[in-house]
Amino acid sequence: MPTAKESTEPAIKTQIRQFIQENLAEVKGISSFRDDESLMENGVIDSLGIFRVVSFLEENFGVRVGDEEINPENLSSVDTIEKLVTAKLNK
Amino acid sequence: MAYILQQLLKKSAALYPGKTAVWARGRSITYRELEEKSNRLAHLLQQHGVRKGDRVGLYFPKAVESIISMFGVLKAGGVYVPLDPQAPADRVGYILGNCGVRVLITNDEKRRGLSSETLAALELSVLTAGDTKSSNGGKVVPWSILAEFPADHEPKVTLTETDLAYILYTSGSTGRPKGVMLSHQNALTFVEWCAETFKITSDDHLSNHAPLHFDLSVFDVYNTIEAGATMFLVTEDLALFPTTLANFIESKGITVWYSVPSALILLLLHANIKRERFPSLRTVLFAGEVFPMKYLRRLAESLPGVDLYNLYGPTETNVCTYYKVEPARLESLDKLPIGIACENTEVFAVNDQDQIVTQPDESGELYVRGPAVTYGYWADAEKTAKMVVSNRFQKHFQENMYRTGDLVTLAEDGNYYFLGRRDSMIKSRGYRIELGEIESALLSHPGVKEAAAIAVPDDIVGNRIKAVVSAHDSTALKPAELQQFCAARIPKYMIPEIIEFLEDLPKTSTGKIDRVRLLETVPA
View 1 (cartoon, rainbow over the protein chains, first blue to last red):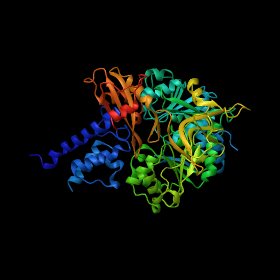
View 2 (view 1 turned 45 degrees about the vertical axis):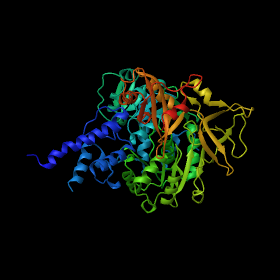
View 3 (view 1 turned 135 degrees about the vertical axis):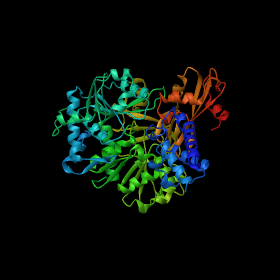
View 4 (view 1 turned 60 degrees about the vertical axis):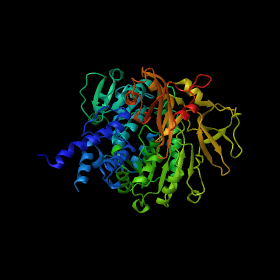
């Protein structure tokens, strides 16, 4: 039996990925990116894109992301964003 | 008195050899190292055939090596061409071809992204990082090879202030970027005015927020070196995160900051901007777009005692007017002035009757004359002749003036105020964008019949871009496909965020796309 945590993990990552793909990557003509790839270096996320990601996380997962948490450690890739959300949901 | 840019470095290296000149990504170099490494690079370049006036491309993310490279190229007598490391390979290839770059300073990763046609034109690549094994594109040497070249003197080249120093490419309305040629004199006219006006000293810590292919960086780089100050490069990882950026300003003790307004607005909205956090900060300069008054008031309140300056000017003149924000007037001002002309520069507005505007509140196109004005655009005599024109207001000697294309008024308070553009150039995040360049990219897609790019005003970034397209077969074309198509041709900041489809675009009686009706049909 998978635990609740294990079963929600892929769903969270999929949702984050899908949001970034459809709203930030495609409009910049970027068709693919890896989950561990820096979204800043490949240009998927720009200065306004970061705040769209944050709003999405807050609305979609009901978490609160403080200004201090908007940093490269938390928001650089799909993997790190998922980690941030999971940590918040498990609190 | 310096008449070529590298003399600024020579002087400061003699005065402050052990002082940190440049910091980037946790690494720094002293003035002595900067002087010596750029001497070595200049010898390397000269040995590989770089002669006076030859263009050398700089194509890698901001680093300490960027500044070494600029001075190295100048000392070899060359002209550097900074390229946007995030631009599509197609655009970079066009620029390299347009100004005939045969020598490129880059890294392995960036170089591998270039087309074989672009690589075939290269004779030498100096790699700041990565593997130098390469099968095509001329000779490839690693950065470490610099050790083999003399450090204690620069190669002998005869230069005057009228020689070119760098070429900055900006958006072109015909679909291709155009290269603004800037001489040592153009740059120094601005640098000397800044040194005098902002009183930069060797104690100052300057930031460099703007990309190096953007003319705002000319102040950061050369005014740091002129004063023997220290410059801290803001790399992408720092620039994107307001709180990280605020920590950087605080921890590096930045005293003078220069950026586009949107960077400051994001700091205001998402970072804890308080005077107490930045006790060293004394001057904030901004340029590139209009600073919305509501945010400027907040900035002034958050940073009491910090001098705020609005600098104005196209790349073709660097900065030509400035306005020192008067906190007492902020409440009553509903629009920020672009101010008065810088020293050694004259500006005036010319009305539709081709007369210089002298009456308050009359409007006209802003013209600029003086040693800051560009010679024109690289290999584009036609465009140059349109914008850099002979001064018809005096007939005693030959001189050029630059038509900015910006409409301004001269107000009662003695300041110029920006009204708008004569053409379809817009600003977004401080970047100059010709809507025609976007339309041209869209139109090169085989499925597109007609295309119009529209600027949608935005409080933070100035403008967002939307496009309206009519397709040959509207069912077959998706916005994402067109955006991906654009990404291979134009920089990311130019790609339309929204693309809407119409059967036909509205036309004027002369058959041109009717932008007024278009805006009514597709509201922003």
